[in-house]
Amino acid sequence: MNYHVSSRFTPTTRIILARIFLISCVLLLGALPAAAQTTDVTGFWVLNVPTGDGNIIKTFFDLKQAGEQVTGTAYIRYGKATIGEGSFSGGKLHLGVILSPLNPQRRAFYDGTFEGDKLRLTVHFPNRDVAFGFAERTTPDAVAPPPRLPLPELHDVPDSGLALAPPMGWNSWNKFHRSIDDVTVRGIADAMVASGMRDVGYIYINIDDTWEGPRDAQGNITGNLKFPNMKGLADYVHSKGLKIGLYSSPGPQTCAGYEGSYGHEQQDARTYAAWGFDYLKYDWCSASRVYNKTEVQAVYQKMGDALLSTGRPMIFSLCEYGWDDVWKWGAKVGGNLWRTTGDINDHWDKMDEIGFSQFDIASYTQAGHWNDPDMLEIGNGGMTADEYRTHMSLWSLLAAPLLAGNDLRTMTEETKSILMNTEVIAIDQDPEAHPVKKISEQGHLVVAARPLMHQTWAVGLFNRGDAAAKVSVTWKDLGLHGKLQVRDLWAHKDLGKVADQFSAEVPSHGVVLITVKH
Ligand code: GLA
Image (cartoon, rainbow, N blue to C red; front, side, top):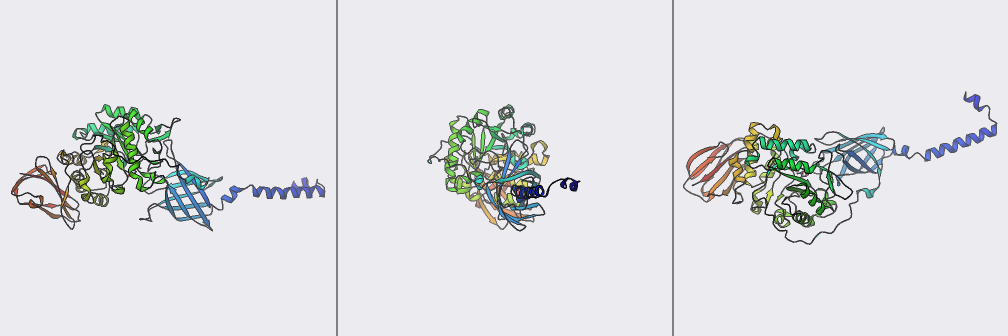
């Protein structure tokens, strides 16, 4: 057929046709950048991953390809991370991004192939559902921070008079992370009442990260598809005799990559007040993109002033992981509580590390202004009952906020007995707000005590070791003497009058918590 057709042309026509063919080939090759992209991924990329709630999380990559090897940098939630392993081979891209320099084996993996001139990537983060997205080429200015806005001069924000005792309630993050929505929050509020938690003092229902949607045409923050009616939700929670809290960041994005309040602080505070919110957790996250660490105080002061100016009482919870000795200035910016450490998790090692590192700064607590060693993990399943009793005892001795972090709808009786031990809660909430003191530390054995009202002492005998051990305290160590009445707060038992000292066999990772009085 081809022969037949070509044989109809004259030799001159054939030469012209051959030239046209050759020129077309050259032009076609030049017009094929997509083909070039399939052999070299060098350059800047933005990966858009839809979250399913109407948001898109952006991750940027600055890639360099040499042969089949790919190296470079990832910008995950605007923190820079090194690509620890990377290849582009047989049309397949593989990237392993080091999530923490302290633990280089903990990686996020991105794998995929070209579809047209985009890369379709599968995203595997440790302990998270697999996600998908498309990456397209972009320019380096895509990761540039937004223009810097001026910060206010430092001054003392007037005291709101809130949180005279450490806040008690619940927060969504520890159990639900991103999988939190309106229906679940309402269910938790119901369970807070039905379980009796509300009646022993747990009042705040706090929505953590991932409620945020885009801003509307006037720049007002909105809830996302998981939270279609923030005011309606607040009304519902209030109708249960509870209060409600939410979360934001002074940076352009929150830690989960959602909309932060940068440049909208005043406007957002007004929105929270208009919705009827009672509590804001304000998490530094991407604020490092626009501010440096020496400016933390001014950054938090800005929101402290904004909250106060709304006229609605809102607890202000600072979350900047203890930087710049926040316990020394948190109260000045209107903070009612401030995180003193990085994130807790549901494992003994982390809870133990955080909890027992807090004694030196305990004296910075005062009524209305509390150290926050992070939310409770009790009932989440990663620790034993003894370990959870240590968690609850330690947090109460520290006068820490008691924010349950478990699913209140499905609590076991054991979890309830720990979270709702009113004798332990009373230590946490003691109106005199005296700080705890470490009385002794011998190897893994720690004794800590806190003076309470009515000349009572709360004493925790802790065993951080791996085997049961005897732990003792003398009355002299507490500045007391004679025979004292002892009550065991986990056994709910009076132990009678005891002279000079008290000893108990304490299980591994466990506690015996007593009160002592004349
Ligand atoms: C940070 C905070 C956590 C939690 C998450 C949400 O890690 O420290 O408590 O709020 O962000 O993204």
